[in-house]
Image (cartoon, rainbow, N blue to C red; front, side, top):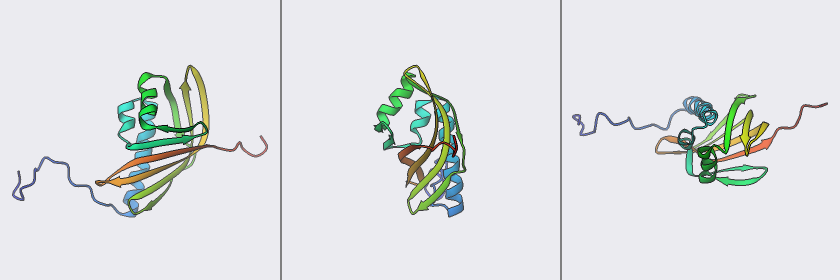
Amino acid sequence: MGESGEDETAEPAPDRGTPDADHARLTAIVDDWAAAIVANDAARIADFMADEWVIVSESGITDREAFLALVASGDLTHSAMGAVTPPRVRVHGETALVTARITNTAHYGGQRFDADEWTTDVFVRRDGHWRCVLSHITPAAPPAGS
């Protein structure tokens, strides 16, 4: 213990951050989360999610446990995920909204799915760490004239 009585090996207490720092941190988080998804690493993916996380898609609402179980079993895999647009990050106190257009290639139930979709992730800051509580995906409209 140091002179202040605090454990010097403990991680420093996170701070609230500045708007620019929050924007940069959230952008890095969504990039790292995408990498974890492409790695098909359920434990790494879970680190980005709050316990109450759900994803809303055209098939309805899927909770954290069900989603992670699909990844852990290998029934759901991703081989590619990339941003088409830079993320739009808006921080409102302890809540942040991150929206971007994403393309990805997934395999589910033995079938390949290529998606082009708009995603919105809702993050909350708890104990200085951002965790996603909700992801919402919407298929992107095809380009005009296609």
